Image (tube, helix red, strand yellow):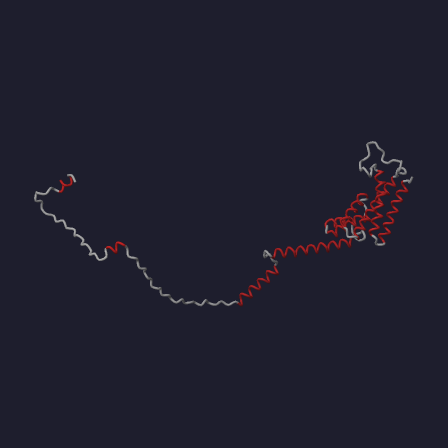
Length: 272
């Protein structure tokens, strides 16, 4: 039965094979070997912490952290540290492979795992910063790089790249917003000066001409013709008849009362 030391050595052998494949530019083979190394080291780490890889359930209360049967004995403190440190290294190397493949999202994920095992892993944080920079997460990349400091090789160059990307992004945004705002006639000072100069030159060359009056000849109205009315039946019957004389209204001549006719007052008060 293999001892703990032999199991660690077998897992690290996969890590070494992954490193050789990486140097040769074979990212697929490198990732495969790193994957085997992670499986071996994670299995040992889970046994040390009492975690079952299959069930994922924590050990029962009072259960020992590791079992001597099937594990080759308990791991020493140095072996525990060796396992965690190498897990961080293998995950960080996987991040380098993903950077080569331009799989920046996956590179960030494995670098995060590396930093969980070893928060002081410089290469894992540096590679995570590179992946963030390529993804356009300038703030995240700057935070990682500043936490490392310019004394770390490669950090200063990455910060220069970050500044250039930030400047290009600002310029692109300015042009985009400038083109958008110009539709609403929001212009800068130079454009305003050019427009004022163009307006002043056009106003100086323009001459005003008086409007020419136009005469309109009077029009003579056409004579109206009254339509003839049709003769009615009454007009036909009265045709040829002489007009009847209108009786004259006799004037009332006041005379002295003879005594034979009744008085006017009496007629007014009597019967009809």
